[in-house]
Image 1 (cartoon, rainbow, N blue to C red):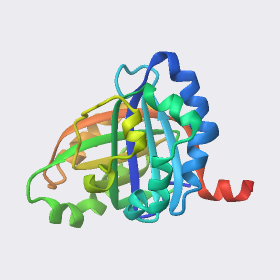
Image 2: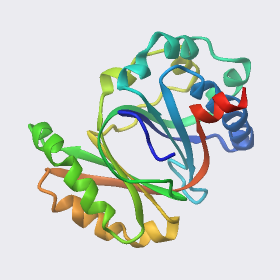
Image 3: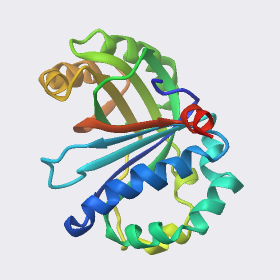
Length: 232
């Protein structure tokens, strides 16, 4: 499955404790199937770290291109949420949602855990990032515990569009990022043990990436558009 397509939508958030069970049921039984039925969506992965007090949950959706994340079909869903979505959306907290161009990937398959590393890019660093993203992916893949690596560049103008779903969530102003590195691995403890080396490789890449904000998640659920098509 890995992360096909040329773009992905990355989300981090929390859920009001009283709604956590309903959130998991809604996300598995309705929300991810709905999203993966939108033209251009390819794969969805839900992430979780029950020990965290902030950003307990994460989600990655991949798409054929970043334009899928502001396509008429997707915006129609965002502006016409289901009744179940209407109950769950107000329970979201600390919501960060950013569309990204996938600049490079290394590795195949799916890991049982994922590290998300949000980074700041120095001003004027876009050209060097595009040129060096594949090399960074390859170097990170060589670190113990890594199975797949992906580098994405934030496209905030795509994901900042306000919709009815935006209005249903409490007002939030989470700190964004310029670049995100996604590292899938054999397990959460294995990725956590290699975090110092991941950070060292990024810091020594020469790509002017700084201020890593890192979380390692378990993979909680995965679904693909192919799964949805086969089930019909």
